[in-house]
Amino acid sequence: MRKVALLVCAVFVAGLIMAQAPTATAAGKTHDLKATVVSVDLEGKKITIKDEKGELKTAPVLAQAIESLKTVKAGDNVTVTCQDNEKGEHQGVAAIKINKA
Image (tube, rainbow, N blue to C red; front, side):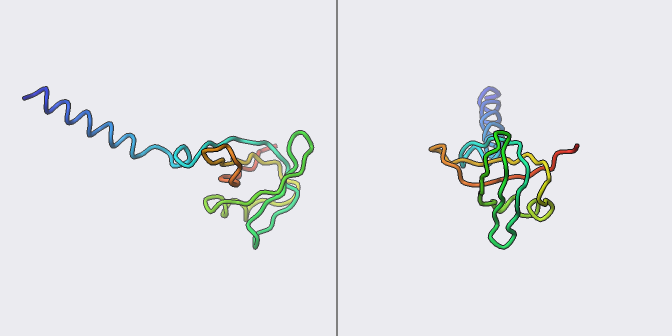
């Protein structure tokens, strides 16, 4: 009887741990990209950045990063976390962090 109770508890704890897994892994993969902000479009919820290779990229900013979008300006060095779907297609910017000089 004690073994059955232990097994039930172990399954319960495993379920709790899996339920708390980050949603980003369920929605796809993420990757970080260091860049310089070129422009910010608050109304359109987009950011244009220049990556380390010098390429300009404009991307939509996802809901969880809108507050961060309000704090950046052109010229800021940032690290953006890009979220991709299960197929590896870019969905948008999930986080923006200003890099300290």
